[in-house]
Length: 273
Image (cartoon, rainbow, N blue to C red):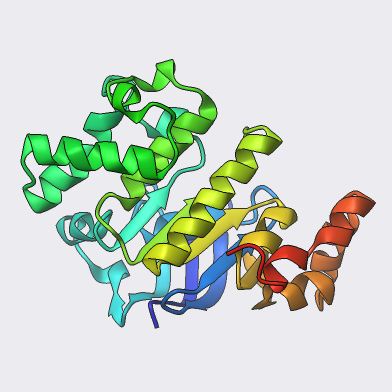
């Protein structure tokens, strides 16, 4: 098992006692498997992902286990976590404009992990950054490698974020709302890139989204979260076509009719990957 989260709870101090943002959640992700995590804003999705990569805000209190191939990362030091980030676990953050360093070019940001973790030389790291920009379909990568984030569109910035996450060839990729604030055409392109990379590289994927259509097309299994708790989990097609929890049924009922009709279609039929 690539990742096993067992009875994870995350709480922050509150005026009237601890406030639980994740409450006793357990999930498993096998090698090469894709798990979708879906729920409305504030349901705990992003906090769960930040805990998995060891980036919870200060003051967070955790209990339970996060086992990466059997090793509990909740007990690791910051130095040990730094050796895992990027190398074992890659993260695509929700907002690429704030996730990217505005003072560094795209190429330098992609190459940084290679130089830090592997001691790759400057020229070799730049060549790999160029290859990755081409792999994530950045137009004219030889020119864009020296561009700063503000000189790129939202879709291009998100592609750079994907390249950074994949530079060290991690075993597990976490994509936190990777299509937020992108137009529909660019959303499809980003998801196509993720589908292709997961299939080609054999990555395990955790895809976080509030968009049920995104989850339907790109994941094998789905976890539905509400107010920090897991309310339903199972094969994506079963969860979205035959939901057991009332909350899941309410999420689906809130969609336009055409969107509801398409849930579970592409991925279930093998068209997404």
